Length: 75
Image (cartoon, rainbow, N blue to C red; front, side):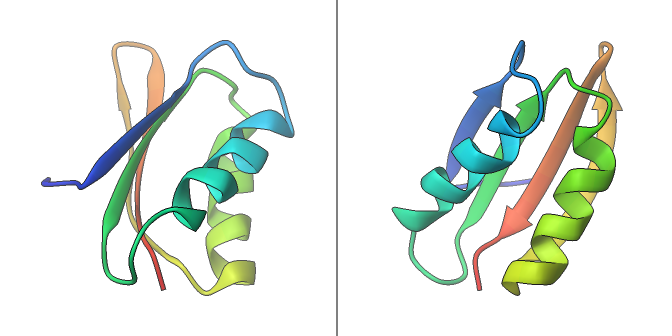
């Protein structure tokens, strides 16, 4: 999937992946896609809830090489 920006949250524990994702999205234009890589298993539920609460779209949630990868489209 194509993306405009990437943020690597590997090694960060809850709530930091969400806090840093929110900050990364803040600098992006509406419609752009952010790729987030995380190692915290809690980020799977957290990222879905974050997207729903903020109006951003979680386009995809997958696992690559024991890491969680998310694609979010900024509202």
